[in-house]
Length: 208
Image 1 (tube, rainbow, N blue to C red):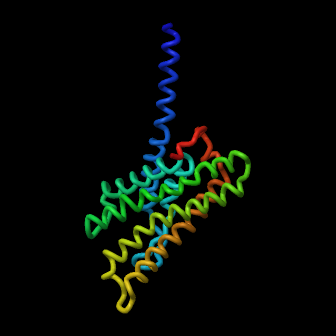
Image 2 (image 1 turned 30 degrees about the horizontal axis):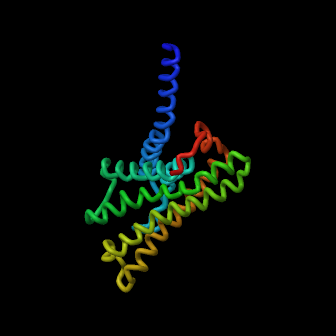
Image 3 (image 1 turned 45 degrees about the vertical axis):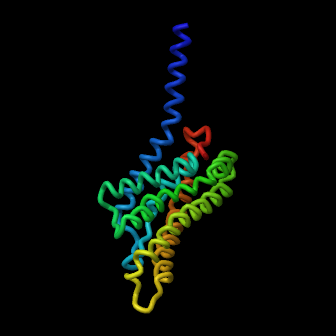
C-alpha cells in the first residue's frame, strides 16, 4: 500500500509539472519578448517601428493554444510597465495599448491544433502556411487596438492636413504589417530548421 501511495505521489508530481510547464513557458517567453523589444528596431519614421519581438509569444501560442498565448502577451505588457518601458497619455489608452493589445497577440493560438497536427504529420509546408496566417491574425488583433488608440488619443500628432484616421492607419498599419512580415520571416526560418520547438515536451493541447 505504501509503495502504491508513493507511485501515486510521484504521478501527481509529474501531472502538476505538466500543468505548470505551459505557464512557465508563457512567463519565460514574455521575458524574452521584452528583451527583444529593447533591442534596436527598424525605424521607418518617428512613430513607425518594426520588430520581431512578438515571435516568443507566437511560439507559446502555437505550442499551447490561445489561453497561454494570451497569458504570455499579458505578462509581456506587465513587464513593460514594471521596467518603465511603457509610455501612455491616459489610463484608458494605457489599458488598451498595453494590457488589451498585447494580450490579443495570443489569438494566434486559435490555429494551434492545426499547426501542431501538420508538423506532427510531416506536412511542414502546410504547417508553415497556417503558422504565417495565425501570426497575421495575432498581429491584426493587436494592432486594431493601437489603431483605435491612435484615433482617440494620438490625433494631435497627425501632420497638418492629414486626418487622424489616415494618420493612425499609416503609423499603426505600417508598424503592424512590417512587424508581421519580420516575425513571419524569423519564426518561419526557425520552424523550417527545427520544428521540434513546437512539438517537444508537448503531447497534448491546451487550446481552450
